[in-house]
Length: 287
Image (tube, rainbow, N blue to C red; front, side, top):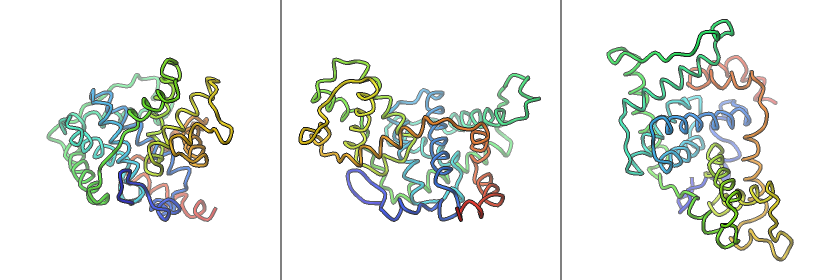
């Protein structure tokens, strides 16, 4: 990955990620990335963690998969390690035990979602781990290893620039701060973009311009968009890059088949990914 103010993936890493080299289709990798970020987000809410730490964790999580395959590490373990590391970086540390308990709850709930319909008549009830059992210490070891691997494989380049301050400045320049619905929606798009790889692909000004573009178009707020007076050029953003980021964000909202969602729940661990590759990998890699 490039060493700059915004650490970005190289062209070679973008064209062929380690997961794709191992036979994971691009769409499935994208969905697994998004689901891993959702787990981080849900864990952050339950832990009452600061938004800056949760956002930082999701960006580190996305960067990690440009240097490592999902066949080697599970998205659950890496998400847990990313949130633990980000909490230290943003100086709002969390207890390891609390993080493990929350992830155990989320994974149990996901398992309940994929259970047979005959069992869904029973209301979900969380069963806490026994702290002297092997499951707790297995998750603890996985958390420590994941944090270490994130630091090692990213070369300790864990600097993250969040887009929220830039968004406020751009909205002021464009005279949109008085339109609360535009501000709220653009902020929401920036949060949703954390579930995509864009923070590892594009500079922050480009991502912010994409969020503003989506918000203003959906709310039908006119901005100068005809050459030579294109508003995004004011912020040194290229139209092709802005439009590409919009595509990443909008793909998050597509309808998914229930079987696709169920498949994601079973691939949180590296064992689930490897099993899926054994059953389906060869045919899908060729296509």
